[in-house]
Structures are given as structure tokens and as C-alpha cells.
Amino acid sequence: MTSQNDSKATLFLIEDDQADVFLVKRALAKHGGNIALVNARDGAEALEMLRGGEIERPFVILSDLNMPGMSGYEFLDEIRADAALRDSIIFVISSSNLAEDVNLAYQHFASGYIVKEMEPAKMARSMQLLFDFCEIIRLPS
Image (cartoon, rainbow, N blue to C red; front, top):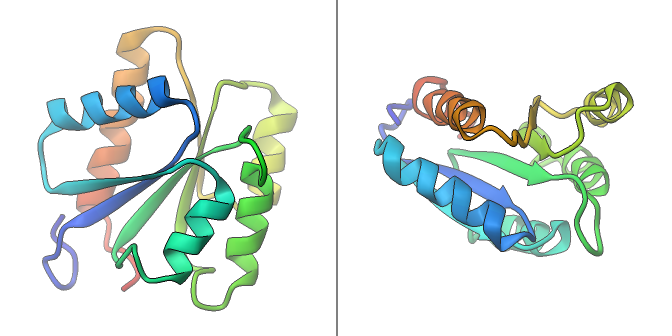
């Protein structure tokens, strides 16, 4: 990532399904680039890591919606209510392609919505776009 301070971007993945974590890790390894990956298993753990300073800026968050404990929607609400974190870039990733789920994510101020695709080529393309975004966009510091 070449941001305002030329530091490496972090992709903070909030996902409880280890198979999905593996898929993102594999896609990132194929991508190469200058992105670190950090994983939390749910929204509560993610908030603890963010508020505890374990994740340094710049970062992009990729959050599942359906997780045990705190849902992705609740996580979005917590982040947007936190003055120190509200400007975070948060993409939702979900197996749901239902319009009501997509709309609800944006109502909770998601920055984008990615569908977990069954076709490997489509999922690889989605991940490639996300990784490119992390490397190209100037992120809050």
C-alpha cells in the first residue's frame, strides 16, 4: 500500500468460519502485494482488538454478517458510534445475495457489500478488487 505514510495496509478480517478465513488467506497469498492480514472470530473480539490498539492504521475491515455473539450489523453500529473508529472502511462479506440484506448493511453504513461466491473465479475477482482497493486508496490514518 502506498498511503500518505507509505505504510503497509492491514486487512482486518472478522470471520468465524475457518474455511472462509483460509480462502481469503489463499487469495491474498496469490495476490502478493503489501497487505497484512489479521483475523478476529467475531465482532466483540474485533472491537477489543481495535480499541486496544492491536490494529494500527491504515486498515480496511472485511466483516462477515452472521457470527456468534455480536452480529456484523451490531459490529457496524458499534464502530459507527465510536468517535475514534467511525471513519473506518468496512466491507461486509456474506453468503446472502438478498436485496434486504444488502440494503440493511448499507443502512448500517457499510462501505461495500461482497457476496461470498460459490464460483471460485468470481470469488477470486472479488478478493482481487478488495486487495487492489487496499493498496490504491488513501486510507484514514
